[in-house]
Length: 268
Image (cartoon, rainbow, N blue to C red; front, side, top):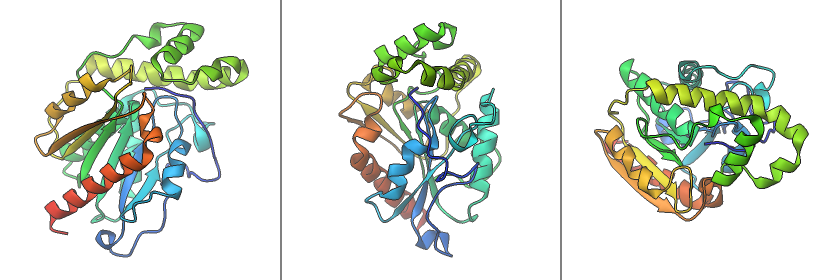
């Protein structure tokens, strides 16, 4: 769900995807993977993926949320709808026939799910697949009422759950800078979890989990099956809550498989 944000402001544009140029015909080029970060996280966590995917059929697009990274001067979003509006604006910048994948880690998984719901409701092109990592499905119990904790208790609880490296507790100035965004994100998630009423998506879903994830363990990953009427797959990989970065090559291989399956279904 959460983690310590890193920033590389020169390489991620404000609400503009950071990516390689696409081919003139979207379907002849790489499938773009729009990546949504965890709570408190910046788009920069996906920059190593974007620079070298190891998968020529993929182009990774880190998406920056307000209040962090290149958008540090902006207030963080107060509601899920506000975040989704921004993601939809990013998607609107692509060519209409260009296939894409939505990838979200932890909080990003919920954002990706809500984005796919909005796309379906508005009759807009759907992703080849929604890929969710390190997250419980909407409508399932949250890991804890993190938004009710004091600042110190919040950070200590996140360290216990594996959502934040223990080393950050030694850097109090950095903590004070990051806590407003982190608290805004966990509050947004709490409010979202209380009022959301999950519906079934018409697009495929791939759910990935870490075998040692204390925030969204393997027993929660199969819950995503109920969120789609289309193809569903799940896989458990070695690692804790941040297993996608520990197992990046494996996750990218799964994304490439989703892209191939999606394009085959489209007849592309």
